[in-house]
Length: 186
Image (cartoon, rainbow, N blue to C red):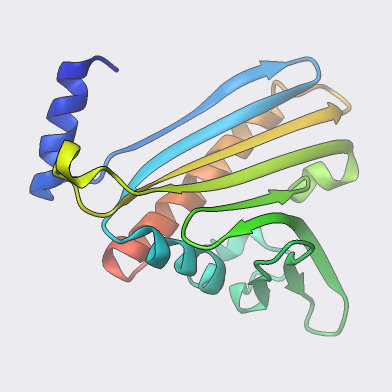
């Protein structure tokens, strides 16, 4: 993005008229893919982080769970902790494992989400919270940058899986952004 567009975006955000977002499949190759999403948030990095880990059941779409009930979701934000879903009659699923937790700064998890769990895949998902330089930009709030890199073996390759994973994560990020910015995920 050139400096003129960056400046205009900063002025628009400072005026509070929009919250910018950017999502894309950064790369697809025969052995994996990477997805990147960026959104502006109207809250501090500490509040944004707490909403991520403490309110996952409020922003995650229930259609992307095994139980279709987000009250069964939790994120234990500590190394070795679990982004898990419990099943009503016992058991559950580990969606991802927490490998790095820095409150207000970053959460990194490893694992393959949803249908990718049945393939020989490894994934790394990073949620990075960035506080803007107030004097430089005039912005308040924070920015979230989500990256999800997946690699390994998948029957049929990654060309079809990457766009689907991107669309699913884009939906989750929009719901998350809406929750932290307005109090409602829709």
